[in-house]
Image (cartoon, rainbow, N blue to C red; front, side, top):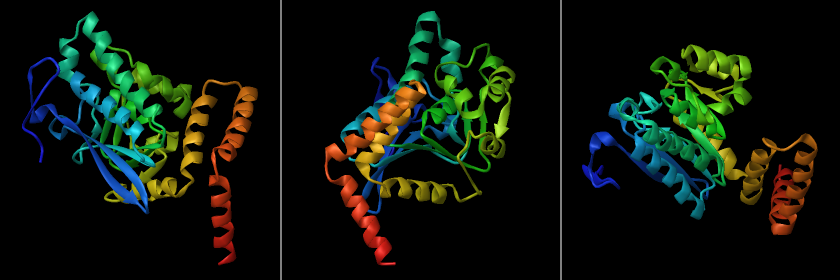
Length: 274
């Protein structure tokens, strides 16, 4: 049951329309899967200050769990995360602007530092801060009706924080087009550009996401955590240093226990059994 009121840290009251962040648990085989839901559908799951802080805290809390993968999505069928709350933007001053945009970065940082893969299930609008958060995820699966964009320049602001990830995902030219025109793209274009990894037909988004999550969950858990950490390291390392880091990661998995032998033996037994 959704609570009707909750106290903010500043002592004011939070109503249903202010939203909340939910963490739901399910299984993929014997693996625990967390689904984090931004639950503010009446406002397209747009993020005000407290909601963005709550979202970051939800990912921080997952560090002490046995989750093998995390799905991030928005409540309802209209929006993943519709961006920054427009009334919040209207109310900002130089001091609160720094605090607010830092809170958006902290969401992205918490996702990127999450030990296991985070899959964005994009079920509608992913605009501005919403697209930055999707870009911070390890994979993006979108329904064919989803819409993505970086409209900040149309409201007098640049696209910032994890918008810096977009050139790596879609190239500098397309990133410039999105950030400098503020125009939206559909999910099909996003898939063609490399922004969307899997394009789901209408009504099949949850099924496509579940299939991907099951693949992640079936992999060796320690190796998966090492793989995510290593790929983050590759973003900042030279090619030579990336190779060296990979060698150490390979050895680390053998040092950590029997997981490589266990999974190799299971693979061989399965192949032998036909």
